[in-house]
Image (tube, rainbow, N blue to C red; front, side):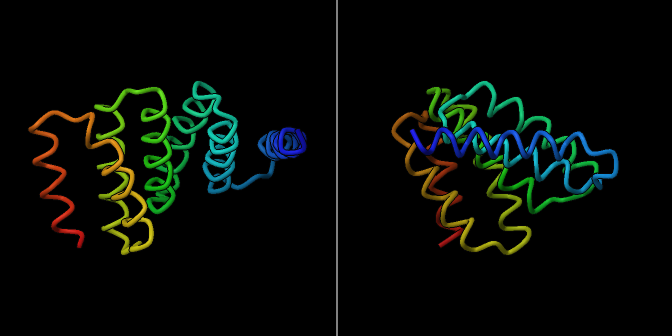
Length: 138
């Protein structure tokens, strides 16, 4: 129950920040991504997804590619929770590409674990691709 109150307070504060006239563009994407993560933690998949999609637009606009990797990973988690494993796979692969590009080794490990988690739900072609990807990251 206490977590729900804290989530509500955080959402209220973050939404107020989004309304600031002088908020730099680079913070828009970060705030939307954080809002998406709050909804992800609340298991509100639709709201999480909507905020992540908005965050992608802002982060592309401001060329915040490191944050894009995090967002694609979280979108993959939304798809995983909603049992859309094909889209989860694609989102995790995008996240992994960003992670590798920017030498985010910790994130690469986390994303690889996410990919392994959905492996039982993939077709043989996707499993082969996954094995190839994992062999290159280890």
